[in-house]
Length: 54
Image (cartoon, rainbow, N blue to C red; front, side):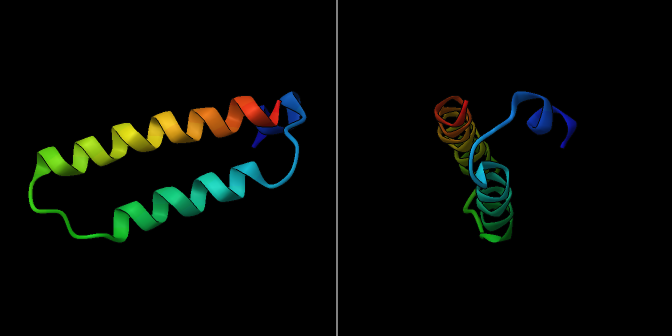
């Protein structure tokens, strides 16, 4: 949270990102590769949210 505070992020972007990651972790995946693809995609999405919040 220190990084979020130092960057003075707007809104509740950290809460949104946490919820997104937790939801992805609770899903069932057909393979490890599919799981990794999902996490990589979340990285792209969540980084965009962070940049938009700065």
